[in-house]
View (cartoon, rainbow, N blue to C red):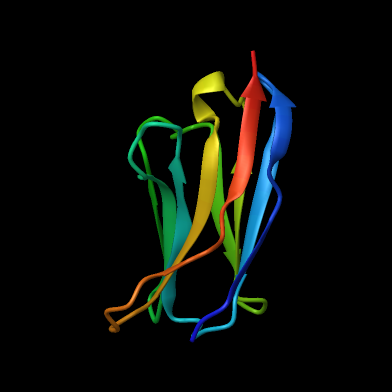
Length: 118
């Protein structure tokens, strides 16, 4: 059983910045990242980072490319999401995602609210 501990989030004005972090208890060879769900909408990908034997690879939603940066600290098995130039449409509950490479199960954090006021 993998445990995910999220932190960050909160209320910020449009144009501001926030940083989310998520620490996992599982294997360091994994996919970690963030999804978000706004009221009345489906959960959507924000960004992911794969940690494998050949290094790290990132993937971003088009809507956040150039504004958000995902990174990881393998020593801490922690992933970070730096969110800059936040917009009102970024308002959502952000969920940490984890999957061990080669295993089928997905794990989700409890979610953290990000609210951007315009």
